[in-house]
Image 1 (tube, rainbow, N blue to C red):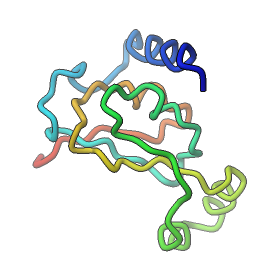
Image 2: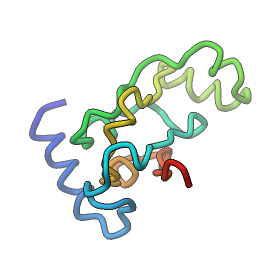
Image 3: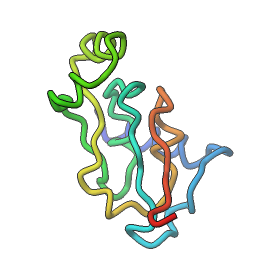
Image 4: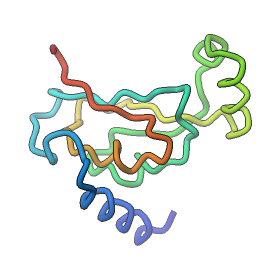
Length: 114
């Protein structure tokens, strides 16, 4: 994706009135983004808008894929078995940009220790 397209996505997400979280003011590690594998289609919007590089999109792990219901596996197969992962979730500052940018509504923010 072009840098300008990603910037435009982030700008739209930042202006979203229903944006959850703490607008990037939370301490790193106080929140974590949770990806619902049954909804995620690996479209990368979370990667494009996250200012802290929390996300990556890659092929779903085989064990996770096999544990999903048949129709969900079929949908994931149609999308190249791509899904979002959060390898750097400890860097999350609870911007909420990923939540509102995700077209499948597959991401939620969770407080850690709550």
